[in-house]
Length: 354
Image (spheres, rainbow, N blue to C red):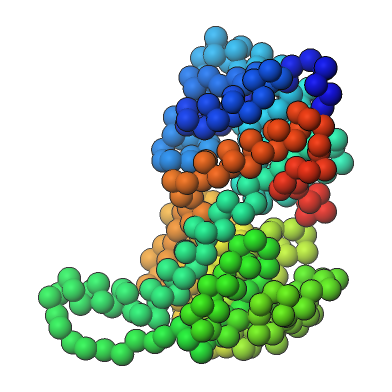
């Protein structure tokens, strides 16, 4: 942006702590006005809650103020929620030039809002959730192989009976999705002395040594990789190409007794086929943070299966989240104001829409 142009309006469109708003205001006070009115945003249920409870409504005066701010906004912190009549909130913001998302996987939303070919700059929270998600993966693997549920049940009974668990070292960990989170999972897997393998994206030129894995399977070799895996971690975005990737045939190709961790999207797995494999023990344990339908319906058998960990799409959320997104946003805001758009980080890859 030319420093001689009009001032830019930044609208904070989802809940954010005051300390982080103050950091944003300090970036370019001579060029940027930050609009943050907490009474126009839903109450938070937990730290880094970007949507608030269902059913939040503004009164008539608040709604008029909210629409006025959207109409004036040049930059949005987060996608605005849909209006009460179901129309996209973004349709009320005709001047917007840049949106900072608070999540990494925004392909479905970009497609739904018709932004694939838009001139609006889109940046994501890529990398912010890598640490928490990786911790969830290894919490799940360690918990299963160290028999945490058994230990807790025995403790509750005040019963002392020694047993034998398993170790991660020497087991084969297969990673599908080698972005920021996938590379962190690979790194920690190697630290546990696991054999780590990964699936290459179609057309990828990367090699195993570059990713730090013991073997890199071609995109057509999914079933062969699954046959070697003691544990499978899914971290891929939901696209037309990945929908239903882990289907009944892929599950049949897995090694009996495999552990499955899904921190991708529920749509990448054939859920009924997975449930059948969990019931038979072909999949020994599944740690699931995402589901085909969310919230997970009360009638889903997954709730009551003893070999399933149901996480309510919360594995990525940590108290540090908003601070990390603010750091990305502030760095990019400085670039945006100075017209250095090519230097902005976390620019969304529009080829990932479907």
